[in-house]
Amino acid sequence: MSDNANPWVTGGPVSDEEPEVIPETSPMTRREALRGPSAPQPTAVPVPESADRLPTRQVYGGATMWWVGAHGGAGESTLASLVLGSQPAGHAWPIAGERGTVNRVIVLARTNFSGLMAAQRVAREWAAGTTGDVVDLAGLVLVADAPGRRPKELRQLEQHVAGGYPRAWTLPWVEAWRMGAASAADMPREYRSLLSDLNLTASSN
Image 1 (cartoon, rainbow, N blue to C red):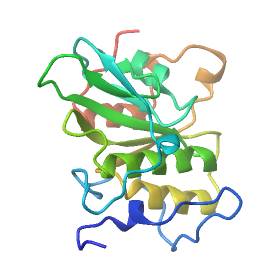
Image 2: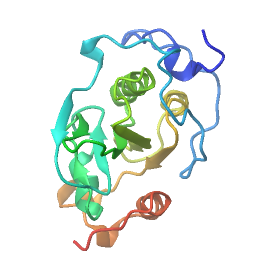
Image 3: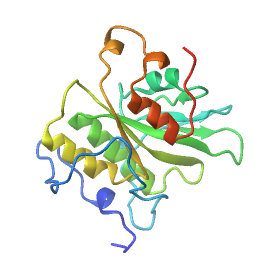
């Protein structure tokens, strides 16, 4: 393994039946500093099997951010509705149709086990260089899958998976949005801080 290899993404595959043992770590805070690789590491990370990779989708027109769900129900549409000029990527890498254009993306995942495993697969794919130089990965956003504090095992796994991304943020459960549309007017502070960190503007809805 190269000295520059990222141990968070180069480890072996994780079985759904037997999760890998994660070292004891402190929970992620709302605002994380630069913590993972800032660019892909194709010489250190093997390309995943096609079944473990996101599809690509050619897109046209600019967007302030593309929200890439690592799995269904990750929150692409919700974040797109809250952030001015952003777009949901449809659980695919948004590849610009215009030559020389690089799309800025954030990967989204829920904080349950399957969501975190999906986020880890996406990190491995990106680290292997499959997106080339047409995608600028800003980081990972983990969206709470349920109200309340998560089990210690999931918090540890969050920390582990987040290490494969340039930056990572966690967003809380919003009970009001469960029964109605998400609104920028009542975004919790964690959402507003995310937008501030990424120099994004809230929509006027």
